[in-house]
Image (cartoon, rainbow, N blue to C red; front, side, top):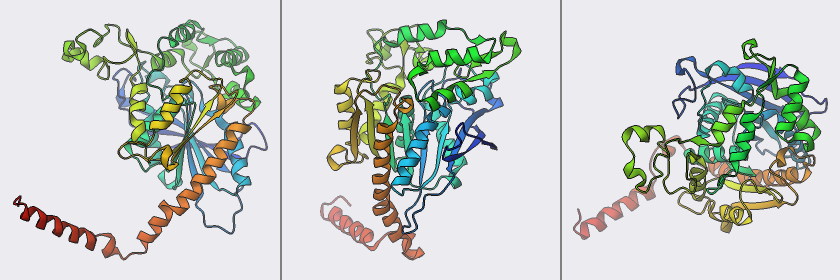
Length: 436
């Protein structure tokens, strides 16, 4: 059951009405220590953005698009709102109608973490959120008509890629901004970052002090004003008195740490014998360990390699947007290889060769592209892609569906004449060959 509340945006000219939902999702997490009690259930904080004014396009029957955005690890959903506003303005200029934009905090971060606070463990997988997004889509399916576009940032891109691999035609098109799709990412560079994260205070006595720490912790001093103000508004909360102080961040440091580096203290599977030396009990602790991974030692992150392995089979068309000054998620060589292999395998879109994959680099851009003080370049690329992909929807899937819908129901529910003819032909071939 969803609890919904209409939210007033920070700016009067913000082009969307905001509706906040709190929904229940299946409590079953992949790792057993992600939550304390499965019987209590798990909640997901979702926000829905509906244009205040429908874009006028009287001469066309084009379908309005649905956008499902997905935040990067440690970034609360509200700080993407300035980007949503820029997307709306680009769409309005192009007379592209937006039905709604949706985004949810992971169950252990942001407003979702507050809702689940007493039930959080400390061992979540990135794929928990992929499954929760599917639950969200099913829950609100009547309000999410196709075409559905995915917009993922950082780890959010990996989660969308996994969801897309489970349901290849759910998304018509995907945009991956600074995606966490790099099988070789890490190589110990995150150790000092996570060490510093775990050393910081957990709570403060005043809201103002907590807001200052939230800005400092995420380096938000150079962000767009709207994104920074939303971080201050939604990135802190007043918690239980038993914690000892009054205000804390909505992104718990222990949740961040455990989702960046999963602990394998016994280094199970890392010996010379690999998995051959692993007992049944050990395998239950780290079922997704890869002895051939570059991530040797007591920490690993299996979703990085999984996400990379899914790229050849990616069915939706994909736009990659990278920051020229960002080295967080792969150098130019990795970016180019990522784009090159996307969609080229069995079940894939055909890749760059067929125009189904595109990559752009925004010079001077950082990993925080969706919140940077200048959102115009990113918004321009996204707007152009959404317009182009909306037209492809109209000319492709929508047109083919309309042709099929015009057929009689008895035709829709039976194999074609050609099917039966070819089947008969194959049987004759098999008989002549003495195989039947």
